[in-house]
Image 1 (cartoon, helix red, strand yellow):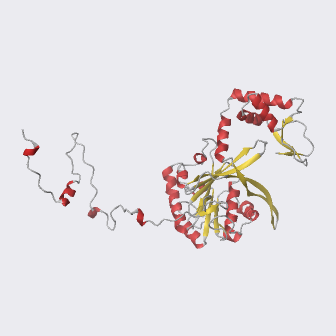
Image 2: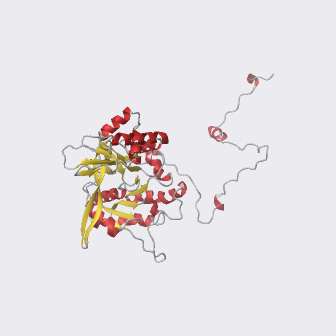
Image 3: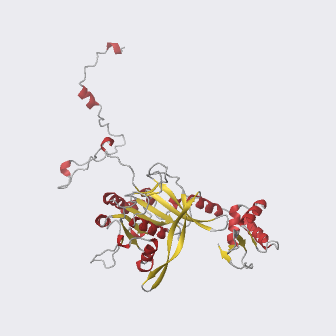
Length: 421
């Protein structure tokens, strides 16, 4: 038997040859005679003037790094610099919520702060222009009066129109007009482009529920924002039903959630005192911190003087911080939706009996109702559903110092001077 000791030592192999020998060599054709995949065409087979496709590798050491700059930064005194950044510059952000929650008024509020240099962030003290692309509201009756009510510098807010001899009703369309939009933003020193709503700007031939097509429309816009140094604030609606994840509720393709760097969400909730409260929270922040404080806000009625009389509009006003987020509100809504028919029916019967008790005269404070409901085994969600089913109203005596809100059944005699909640 031949042993390894009997074999001659292998000859010395040149290192270069050894390296080449590690290159994989073609293996014999498979037994099933499957044909080999086509080889890429040689360079000489390319069309005239076409460069061959190639990969370019850049070492990370050659990439210049920069800190994130924030268009809107609510960092309080004493906190780490830019630790409360909410909307990063040169990116796509979305403001989303259900109808009637003040998203457009928020966009006008942002516009006013940027054009007057009063928005906390990179541009504080540096007024800049804003392009406001609106597809649904009237400039004459809604947008311009809202801008005045918000205190915007109207000389720095630009309506955008498209002139096209071949299309008399042309409008701003993505991705067709992306390059023109970027150049216009650069020419007018624009810091923000508002898209109200964002879906209205996407080419009608693009299916906004197909991720690949949405990317085709919006990726060039994101690239233009970085190249021409502007930020996009797109307004979007929430779907009527879904998970308690605000990002998953943004109408349209999931690609919206993948492309945006910031999501500001809006919701409305019932407080324990029976009042309505608007809540705004940062629900996505790819370039900064999540878990920043949410804010309450109000939508205030406002009259704007015109040459032909007053114009009645509304404006956004940022309120104090709150521990309740939009995600919390959605979670509560989903829980309410989970109350079964029997539980709801029992809660309705209990609440009606409780309020019509002669000792109460058809009304009681929310605190008393909630305490009694707990004692009767009625869940908070079932109680909330019963309140809606019975159309129970919240009232507060006007002009009474430290007056309490009360829940009142429809038809119960109101107290003089009551205020509705």
